[in-house]
Image (cartoon, rainbow, N blue to C red; front, side, top):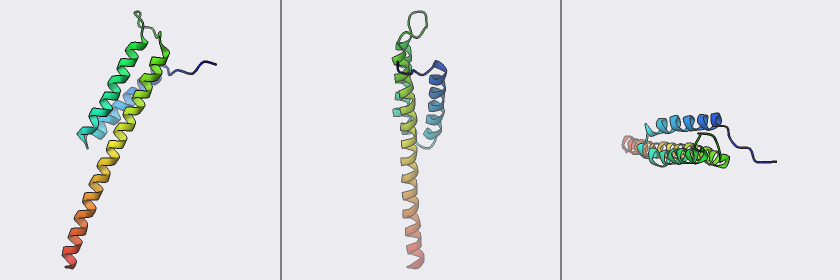
Length: 105
């Protein structure tokens, strides 16, 4: 049985979801845009590689690679968002410790 390849509508949905998510996380940390947007660029590259001269899918494996890059973009954006929140939480904890020490001292 041949492997399943994502449909163009599945790829489109993954791409649009990754793009929205990347933009949302980039509002908190602009550095997230670089790796995630690179992954989306790679997805576009693989999609173009998948098409033949008549805009038909001639290399379905390239469609799978494109979808994988969309998923990686979401992972990269999520990771950057988590790191940003973690850093901000650490700074908040430090600030509250200093404030508490001043109040007690």
